[in-house]
Image 1 (cartoon, rainbow, N blue to C red):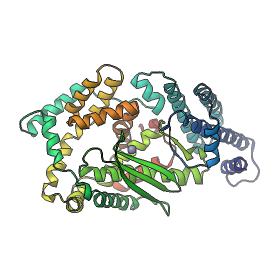
Image 2: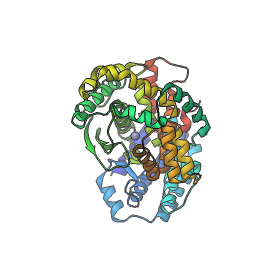
Image 3: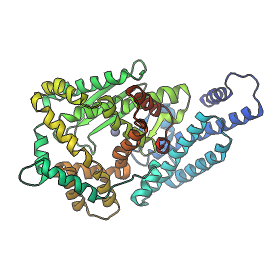
Image 4: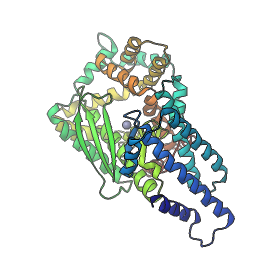
Length: 437
Ligand SMILES: [Zn+2]
């Protein structure tokens, strides 16, 4: 029944309001039908792949019966890879005949998801890819990375700006440690930050009625924050408190996991792609797919979008510092430290590539992370631990943010246009290559 009504809705979309289909419109409808077949098969494939890797499926809010069927009788990795390739070939065959632009974009996005599945499933079989090939396969993009020598120049500048004894990383880390939020103040600080991120987002994007989230503090995770999208416009946001949380994390996390980050992306995708268009493939979200570039990139860029220029400093100083019991008069110094060290963030990807490609050992990667990202040994361990676990997924943060920023700020548009572009990439099938000039 679902299958029939789904084909009908897509056919009507392709036909527009006309009553008698012309031959070209009829072939469009046929192409749409085959996309529907691919979509249904892709959902099944993804849910079955999820039985081979617990984190494979990041979110699923389609019919529970499909999940149960996948869990009851999953195919082997080899069979799933063969299926992914068959479906990719079906899209390649259908693409030349798909005239409607939305359907073309849908098809291209589906193709990217299938190539990602093929790559990830091979990795689950034990195949090792070089860093760039792994990134290209899973995320349809290869990051442009600067050599560490580029960051040496920045470090030399910071040595002069941040005087003192001992290694620069130790100086910066101990300075930053003064801005830790006491555990008993975390909830009010994060509540206030998320509310402000939401207020700023709602001023530009219409969010569906009833959207909401729960927030939990957790420990023992390889990440610092996570958004579990539950469907029906609801998220569970978890914040990892393994390491002391600094005041800047509140706005970072409120925007990244919440508004206009993951929560908003997921609910716009559900509202406009899964529900309005009936593109059911969006009801399942694999962790490793080109969508992750958009997801992490827009979540990180969303912080700068929601708090342009010094608005973030003003909000943190006037609202969050008092809630955290920190001295607002010290806010500017911490903000300035972050501005000064921001230019080093790309070193994380350079180190990740060197490490995953076997050019440096794990202890060397830890030492490089401390040196170039100005981190304590414990924080460097958390950073490399993330790379161990998620491998080339790390590109989605820094490189994804660069791609999204370059797209949204192209031509230096006014604020309203920046938000319009943000909403567009959050609610349409978008590949990393769509963000290029
Ligand atoms: Zn994220």
